[in-house]
Length: 515
Image (cartoon, rainbow, N blue to C red; front, side, top):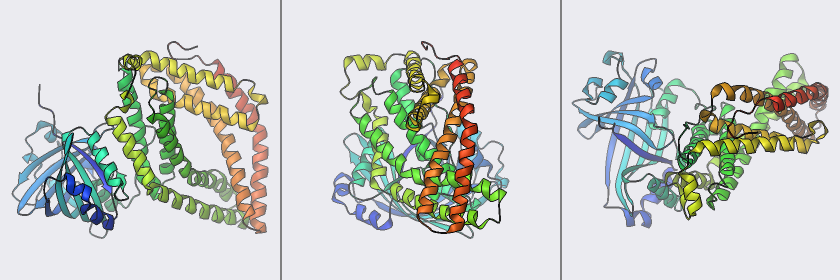
């Protein structure tokens, strides 16, 4: 069997420069440090083709100067949903890339077809790094304090961060160490590498958005493996969208981060009876807090996109629509200021680190009964069918006599539909796609019908908030126009909603052991 490719397991933390200095001098750090550490200046050139062929392959090629030495590194994106990624290094005689210098066939395969003459120097990082080796009871960690800049020809981005690289032990130790740092200083967990930041500077684009990640379950996985896989994918979905949510340039960022947190809460609820861990309730409550804090920004995004923009297109010169848009835009900006504030809150970092640590060590096994431990080694297939069936039953029960339900009761049906959708998405790889696809299609149509009604109700509440803040007659006239538009739309939406409900009730369940 060929040897495994070399792997780097690393957790990155963002900090303010002043807080970095505070942590350097903290007594807790001195107590676990193996020595005084070393300080070096690192200059790194990042190479790619002009059309970023390596980035599209998910790899980074870098040549770094360390004193009088030159080291070429090739790194992959994260493997799966953990902290590991592939890393290869080779010494070079100069600050010039040499892809053929790698001996490992996996590294050479990643660079295959990219001739050295096609490579160009895209950006540079100039870092002052202080490194300490930290000895923990169950791990050895290299802790690097990095300050400096990432630079292109005409732009730069400051760096102040901590990199925790696992040298011995298990990855859970990195999260525990970061939690001990959080007790000393404010910090943020970051998935954004220096290379990613450099590419953004080059392209002048906002952070990307991760949509609808598929959960990589497979038939025959144990329940224990499935829980770890589902929750890790929820965490990955959240953290992959945090930078875009903070930036605010793409409305998808905050939306997908909220979706990820709702999926996380649903997963924690789904598995609660299987693994009755005390941590589940705290994790679910904290995820609810964080998702709630992102809500206003998302509401104003939807209001501007689904309500104001169509009117603006129909009546581009209407001063009332312009006033409505300006007022909503101010509210949106306030919503995103609140998003940035909550993402910088240590409570957010504590949730991320606690969940990461709990996942890495599979904390649901703590104090588990013999019955629970037995259930954890069973195949996930049977439990998956039962959980989807339970979620389906809740929808059917809450939606009975749908035409007679009041708005609050319909809201409860919509929430139950979301939970069914998340359960189906988690476990869909375990079932025949030919059977799952028709059900998923009809569920999506029904969700769209309910979602439209919810968007209208939310928009009406936002309109009242805007009109309460001003006496501007043009804005009030525009708000009245929207309310009338919604009232007429509701009359036509009701028959469509009831028809979609009947079609959903008629579609055949795809799960084994279902109804």
